[in-house]
Length: 283
Image (cartoon, rainbow, N blue to C red; front, side, top):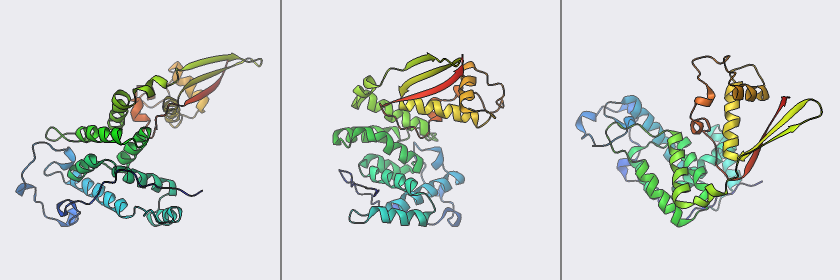
C-alpha cells in the first residue's frame, strides 16, 4: 500500500531568520550568557548557564531542521522516498511517517511554529502528540486557527525559569480545549462504560468491559506496566490490580493505578469508538 502525505492548508512558511538557524555546536562555542540580556520569562531549558539545557535545545533544533529539510515534495513517490529515508536514518518506515506528518502539521500552526522558533521546546514526541490530537479537527481552518492561538499561548513561558510542559500536560491541554471550545459534541457522543458478567457452564465467569478506545488503551497499559514487573499473565495482572494484590511490586516503582492516567498513556490517541476489554476469571 502506498502512503500518502497531503499538503495541509493553509501552508505556513517555516523559513526562519538567520538568528534562529543553527550556529556552531555548543561544545565549540564560547559562553556568551554573561553578555546577553536575560529575558523576563524563559524555560529552564534555556536558562542562562544551563549548558545541559543548551545542548538539549541544540538537539531539538537540529532535529527540527533535519525533518524540515527532508519533507517529501508533492510530486515525489512518497512511498519510495520514505523507504529510502527510513534506511538512511535507521528508523522504521512508520515511525518516519509519523515524524513527517507531525512536521507537515506545523505548517497549519504558524503561531506555534513561531513559539518553537523562540524556545525550541517541542521535540519529536511533542510534535507527534500535537498532530495526533488535532486529527479530530479534520483540517477545519477555523478550528485550527483557534487551537493554534490557544496552544501558542499555552507554550509561551510567563515566568523566569519555567518548567517545560510535560507530554501529558500538552495532551491534556489540547484535549480539554477541543472538548470545551471546538467539539463539545465529541465528549457527549462517547459511549457510556458498560460491564457485562456472563456465568459459563465450566464454572468460570467472563467479564466484558466496553468503554471508549482511549480508556481501554490506558487500562491495557496499566496491565502491561504491572506484568512487566511481575512474573504473571495479563489476565492475572488485571485481577491483581482490581483486587489491589500488588505487594509483589518493588516499592520504588509505585502502584500503577496511582500514576497519572494520561502520563501512562503516552501514545494514546483519543477516539470516540468503543473497545472491549475481556478477562476470564474463576467463578
